[in-house]
Amino acid sequence: TMHAYEKGIIWGNDNYRAQSSIVNLVLATRNVGRRGTGVVRMGGHQEGYARPPYPGSRPAIYVDREIIAGKGKTMTYWGVNTFQTTCNAEQYKTAVLRRSNRVKEALAKVRGKSVAAMIDAVWQAITRENGLFVTCIDLYPTKTAQAAHLLLPAAHPGEMNLTSMNGERRMRLSERFMDPPGSAKPDCLIAAAIAQKLERLYRQAGKADMAQRFAGFDWKTEEDAFNDGFRSAHLKEIHSQGGATGHLVTYERLRKAGNNGVQLPVKELKGDTMIGTEMLYLDGKFDTRDGRAIFQPSEWNGLLPQVESQKKKYRFWINNGRANQVWQSLYHDRYVPFRSERYPMAMVEINPDDAKELKVESGDIVEIYNDYGSAFAMVHVEPDIKRDQVFMM
Image (cartoon, rainbow, N blue to C red; front, side, top):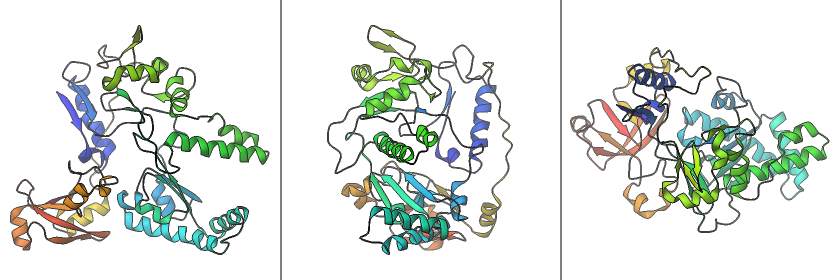
C-alpha cells in the first residue's frame, strides 16, 4: 500500500508525531522498498533538495514567540507571508508592526540625510527602543511587507533558470525565457549579493573571522550556485538529495533529459545520459549509521490546551486547507482576473443542515471568530461537510 499524506497531517496538531505514527505503520507492515509501496507527503510544489547543515539548536527556537517577546534586532521574510499564515497571526502582526514602526519613525527623522545617518538611526532604534528592522524578499509586496524597511524583489520561474525536485525525487531544469521585471533577481543571486556585501564590510572592519563566514559566494548565475551547492556535496558537508553522485548532474545533462529529468540520486552515466534511482530501499537498508530503520515513539499528546478550550467553547470545528482552483494563498492568482473574480474572498463550506439552522445560503458573507481572532468568508453549502464542522480555504 502507498501511504501518502498532506495538509491534514503536516499542518495539524502535533504534526511530527502524526507523521511518525504513519511511518511506523509503514515500516511495521513492510510497505516500503517494494513495488506499489511507499510513504510520502503530497506537496504539489517543488522541494528544496540541497542545503548546508542546520546551524541552530534542536529543537529550533520558536521565532514567532521570540519576536512577540521583543527579542531579535532584524527579521528577514523570504518567500513567506507570515502576517496571513502563521499561528496567532494577529498578535504576531501587532508586535511586528509596533516594533517596525519604531524604526520607521527613527528613519523619518533623518529623511534626506546620508546613508550612514540612516544606518545610525536604525541602530539606535533597535538597540535603545526595541525596534525591529524588517526585510521582505518576494515576488510581490505582501501583507507582511507593510512592516518592511527594505524590499528585495525576487524572480519567478521563467524569469530565471530553475532546477527543482518534486516528491518523487525527480529533478528538472526549467529554463529562463523572459527577463525578470526591474531589478528582480533569483533567490540564489540575492543571497550571493547579501553575502558579498557582508564579507566586504567585515573585512573593512578588520573582522576576518566574520568575513570568512560569508566568503565563497562569488556566484554570477544560477548555474554557479547549483555547481557550488548540489554538485559539491561529495567535497564538503552539504545535506543533499543528490548525495555523493550529485556532481554527475549538470545543466547540460538536465537540458538533454527535458521534462523527464532524472530521479535522484543518480546511479551512473551511460554516455551522457543520467541513470536515476526509480525506487529506494530495495535492499532493506536505510540512511542510518547501521542501515536499520528507526521507529519513532509517537504517543498522542492530545490537543493544545488553547485549542481544547476553544473546542469546548465554540460549536464549529474549522478544517483549513486549499482548493484546486487557486494556488496556495493566491500570491500570484490574485493578479489573474479569472481567479480573483471567481474567488473574490475565501470560501467557507458548510453542511446544508447547519446552513439552514443558521439561516445562511451560498453567497452569503459570514464572520468566523474565536477568542484569538476573526475572519470573513463567503458561504458555500456543501453536502460532503459533516455537521458542526466547516472547511475554509
